[in-house]
Image (tube, rainbow, N blue to C red; front, side, top):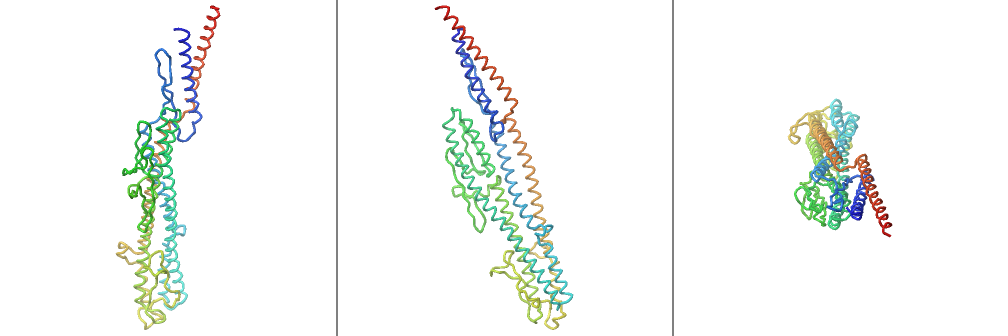
Length: 448
């Protein structure tokens, strides 16, 4: 081999190892950068010309990444749903004083006191106080559910706004990937792409496909396009009395969004709406049955009993508007006839019996049973189920994340060993150049 050939080969080796050193140094510097995938220099033998870096291969598995995205979507959905349901559960937590199970018992207990002394004004006032407390707890529960609902409607708007921004950024990255396939910044755009996909997947359930340039096409679970090449499609939120809809290009996709934070919020909001309906059913049935019986009695004025509960807005009674119809204790219709008002407790006994009666409207349950079973108990079971699903999905996510880290993450010790190897190879090539240069200088001096 001629000296000039040796110089050429050594020079090529010098350049190649410098590229490898820079790549390894980049890996070490980004060891703790979230979303960074390490690079590996791929060396290729050049016949008669030494070695070159054919590519800086980004260590990445699209199959494993899709598993990671799927696990992330599932975890975020259950996280949001569990958060909402936990807040709903706190609304009906009698142990902390926020439910109204005790208020139901106190209501009928106060009626017992009236039955013992039908003309006792103090007992009647105590009953009205218990009734007012029960009404207040029911309305407070409904108001709390509305506050939770409005909070997450607002969060839904913010999340959709953030999602639309991320979709635009992903479309821009796709455009940059197309223009930088052969440039040193290509892997950086791929890292940015994956980071955007990860954040998008935390918000919405998606399907994704990659082309040969690394660009991604993103779709909803049912196939509606979110990003196609360098084009992004926005989502919108439509809220009405019937609920909330998420639309892509005017098409409602809400029912297909089961995963991601948006899916979790939608599922949680559906639960809030369901428990508002259950609460309304309790309040309207309670008011209706008590009113029907109260109208069958006579008050201390000798008049037929009127409404015991009414609404404060003229609409049918429900949990949002129920109020006590009067504050005068003498208007409580405890008697069953107008003949002996001071001692007759016939109607108040009938009112008391309503506490144990089972009603078709409540699924053949009493008021207390419906509250304990269909409001508190069912909610507790739902929360426990979602909590279990969230815990399991978190474990799956952590397991897949660890696999991604093992494949694409940076091991500083390994990179330091590689760096030393590339540095030694660089030094060896530099030494060959130095020796070849000295030999050439010697030969030139000999012919002068």
